[in-house]
Length: 290
Image 1 (cartoon, rainbow, N blue to C red):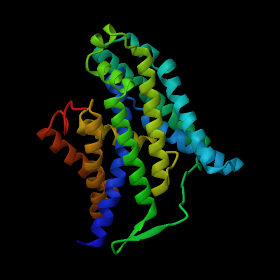
Image 2 (cartoon, helix red, strand yellow):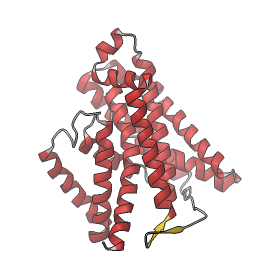
Image 3 (cartoon, rainbow, N blue to C red):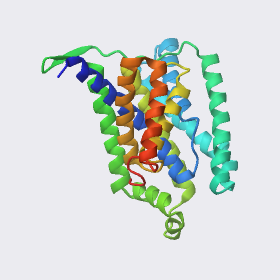
């Protein structure tokens, strides 16, 4: 097998796992709160910008800067859920979805403008001490291996949490049968806040992991939101398992499209591929399966 093909495939898998981290949070939030969070990618950028500013301005050690980035992102998600989205929860059904789209889009535009205006040079790149390693005759970037393993480990942990823990079962019960969950005493408000915080935590990790293999810029939020939404739709809007599968598919397809036809045409071709896939599987690759 051609070495370049293997390396491109590895790049696609790593990118797909990062997209799955982003999309998993979107899926959980939509499933429980009924809100498609269009500010999700900007939360990722909040984490990377916070870390970059701390590193560049006051030379905070990298681990502390990353932790601070995660904490600021989680705090922002709490503000979004408790304050910004408060009017949304008074509505139900399509009205909630539509108002949620408008409000999160406005919040996303506000964050995007504030970030690129206030911190235009806050790029986050994490360089590893060992740039590459040899494996079975291939020279593989160390960043690829570390980010792939880290992303996969986080996704497995999230899946196990949702499947086996009390909190995970409560989240799934509210998503699948809210009335039944309320009858047995599961609090909607409590777990709604938890999924927003969990989504922010996952998207923070996605931003940190992405910065190991590529530079994350302050203007990257819109791109990550769009790609996360595409993964959600392809995987099944309520399926965490589906987001993992769809993230891998889209990551690999997009990576090879970029190699063969370039970045801009790759987006067009990717959308055509997704439309064709949804014609065959209109409810996503795995439908409603968790």
